[in-house]
Length: 623
Image 1 (tube, rainbow, N blue to C red):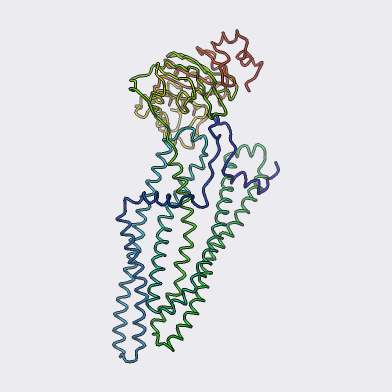
Image 2 (tube, rainbow, N blue to C red):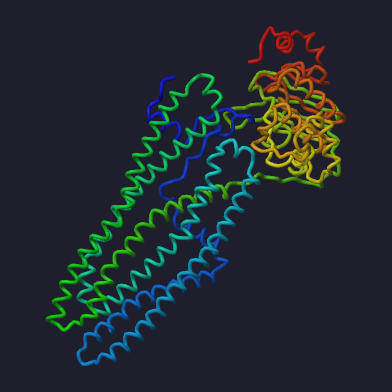
């Protein structure tokens, strides 16, 4: 494989939307497309700021305290600077004796120390309290976001990538935290300092103040230009970093395939292109990010020189005091710092607000509806009826057309057919992961739309092809099927699933820690734990979706023994490509293009010599 160009790699790994495709649950309303990533400016600044403020509004008193400490800090800094004026003038006064000057100097030092200590204490408490406020707000935001994710429908996850959702909790929330911790304080403090400095300068000498104000447009224009450039290159840097991270993640995940086909050298070349691109953009971003200080500093020095020169003339011609000139040129040299700080924080604030919009976009999504009528039944026996069911993930593509079936309690119903025929969709409708477009689905004679979704789902156990184990002990993973199950019930479920023997051979038996989605277990062992999890649930309805498709024949027989025990006295729906696993089903339904084309038991379908016969005898392979 020839190395791809940098442009091609960037399109693949920095793209906002990936191609739609059919996932395990079929194509969602928009396929498995990724939503457009964040970045840039927020769309509704006012609304976003108001919503963020609501998260800290409960701590208004603390916010007021922070503002008071901020004012004390600013005033202490300005007062300390201004107090130098009388000290210098007193020392230059020839009419004062030496001992008087020393006494004044000692008193001034004591007062200056007290003023600056007050500033330091104010800064400490201001930062500490603001950190408490911001972290409390972030905690609420994370809780709201995580809670919302639990209430969203499956169709939402069909259209969102895992990486994009994770970025809401990491990058976006972290940006909000940085803004609340640092940027907001810097903006408010910079504005207060700027106003306070200007007031003191005007109080000291209005004519020199006008000279300094002449430099303000130059300060603002320079700061805005540098901030705009740095923001542009920082955005490019983030895109390049995202492309490289995506490439690394994909390469590490597919390392076995890479080695099988000997593509190491090609990957090294492609990574080199992405790495070099990142370095070039980082250099530009870091250059413009670091040039703000020198630019503002040099303009400030010019301002200092001009102000000092004009101030000297005023001292000679107009009787302006030396102490006043000294503090004025000091304030004048610091005048650019608040402007620079305000410019530096603007891009960070807008970035954080854009991230907040991305978080609120998830929080504002419509939740999974759960409307129902009537009382909740005490028990479900498992009598399931599909009557003329029609369904499509979107209006343009109908997946199921007029599906009708009846599964009596304890019966085993199997679905076979080509890939994409709609087998998995049938079981997803039973769980109400999606709602049907037409027809009815009833359980024990009651429309499932009139059953609470939690109640419905706790009465349906599922064993999927893609097993998922959580970080924790083997016992905890089995108990996930029913959290109040006792240790004895967990072990009984493992025996039912034929998992007990291999579990006891693990280093710590049932207390062995599973991590990495069960990376330390074989595929067959993971599936057995999945079956045990379904067993402990005691649900009267069972769905087995390609439960043995990814294991070898020997392991399949082992798993089938566990499933046979699991299916006892349960209404079972089986989806399988391997037709040997559905031979003993009470009813086999053959689906093609969303329709049931044949139904019957194994012998009846073979006698028909139709589609099932072709699939079973191999005269026509599954698509």
